[in-house]
Amino acid sequence: MSFYICSNCGYGSASWIGKCPDCGQWNSLKQQQGFDKKTNQPTQDFELTPLSRIKSSTEKKLATGVYEFDRVIGGGFFPSSVTLLTGEPGIGKSTLLLQILKNFKTLYVSGEEGAEQIKQRLNRLKIKDDNLDFSNTQQIESIIKGISKNHKHYQIVVIDSIQTIYSNKIEGTAGSISQLRETTSQLITFAKNTNTPVILIGHVTKEGEIAGPKTLEHMVDIVLSFEGEKVSHFRILRTPKNRFGSTDEIGIFEMTSLGLSQVKNPLAFIDDEKSSAPGMSIVGVTEGKRPIFFEIQTLLSPTILAIPRRVAKGIDYNKILLLLAVLRKYYGFPLDKYDIYINVVGGVSIKSTAAELGIVASLISSFKNKSVKNNTVFIGEIGLLGETRKVVFEEKIISEARRLGFKNIYSSKNIKNIKELKNVFSS
Ligand code: TYD
Ligand code: MG
Image (tube, rainbow, N blue to C red; front, side):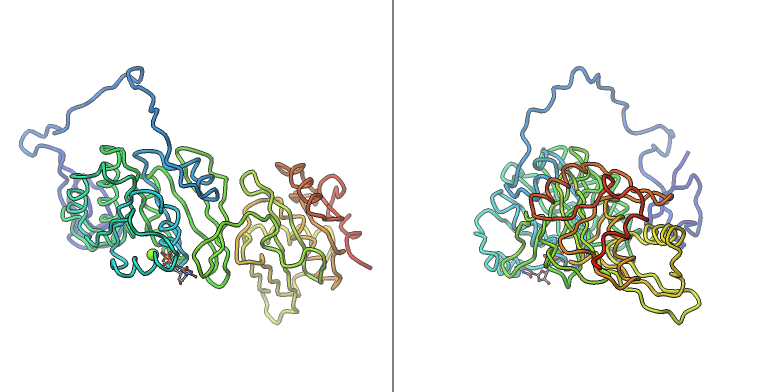
């Protein structure tokens, strides 16, 4: 039996087809290696390993010393691990890596920037350059041959970005799905064979998320995503996938003229927690295990459209629709007459459900044109019946809010149903 693989997108088929049914490319299906063409026998031997004979690795994780980063990846880079760092172009991926890896002997392979540019950036970041070797090579076979010779010399290898690297085994330009898969798979083999952690940078644009590095997520050990709006200075590092640790820790950074600095203050995203204005509320949530506070802003404006506009930035769109439906039912507001804009200040996004009570409060506040009382914070999830639900780590957020000086703390403890939100506004 033969097997054919599309050299453009990696689609597999048992018979040859002129046009790939998956990506529509013509003449791209090539016979797959792996079967001896004469005997139709597999060419790889079957291997069996009783797990009892495997010694647990005692090798230590490589901690970068940057707390906001190490916590997110689960303590440090595991030897032989492959990490994919994704984010929009210009968000700060290269800057982040140059900063966190400054104490390791690092090989930095970049098809994005030249040696001089990297050197300039190190100078700007005030990082000494004696730990960093640079390569501009883009053919993966050559890169791996080059590093395999003296891999012991390097504690970590960075590929910036995986979209600029290509393999000579595959047709198709650098960055195509089959190239991404092949180059990544060779780098994974390199990492496992040499016990060297490898970090791949992958550019993701909002539109191209499906076709790009997303297709590599199942291959690598850790996926990190670096998020934020370029207009805002804040950046959040998340782990959608982590084979070595939890996936709900986040790291918070701020882009400064001296690169990224760690943000530890839970009120960093809030300009002034004391005063309030119509449409504004402060929510307390946890990201990972740490309490953090965000400001929600809502604007209602009379609509001229048949289907009013709903714009949500930093909050899931469907969550907003759901909260609006609950609000319409239990308050009877004619929300269909308004365009509604909701925004999380700071250009960040909130994943936690604990923000829902505060979102509803900011909607009511905007509708009534009345401010929430000064010094107020909301912590709670909203059910479809309008009830407030307790959230994970509720106690922890409440005690952190108290410590930070919030006077009115609303949660499932004192607001059982959104109808009781009537009392939270200043008269
Ligand atoms: P960069 O790390 O090159 O982004 P990526 O690798 O994700 O494409 O960061 C790009 C932006 O960061 C750039 O527009 C300028 C800004 N920046 C600073 O504000 N301060 C700094 O010290 C550095 C190095 C970059
Ligand atoms: Mg870059």
